[in-house]
Image 1 (cartoon, rainbow, N blue to C red):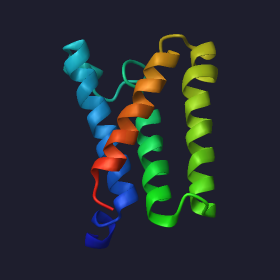
Image 2 (image 1 turned 180 degrees about the vertical axis):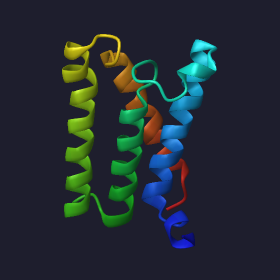
Image 3 (image 1 turned 135 degrees about the horizontal axis):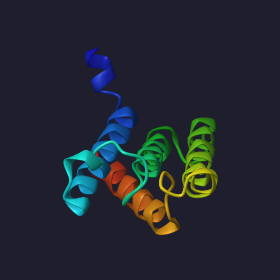
Image 4 (image 1 turned 60 degrees about the vertical axis):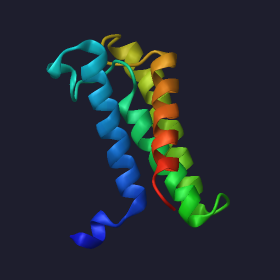
Length: 114
């Protein structure tokens, strides 16, 4: 269990998700917004962006692991902005929500010591 907590990529993703959810509570001034789909910033994109950046920092920017994480990020972001928004406009994200999620995830990843 302690080894899991020392996994920097996992911790970056976790803290990005947590940060995005806390920001939603602050922005919307509603505790019910914690964990809900949609809204500013995208927790899905923040989580996968932090994961992708941290994997890149740990394994190298040209590693297969980084490629997998980057493709995972692109699928999640595409789904958040495109597919889910088309199915239910209230559950998807606007482009700016996804971009701000990406920026948040990037910041969190680079805050965590390498």
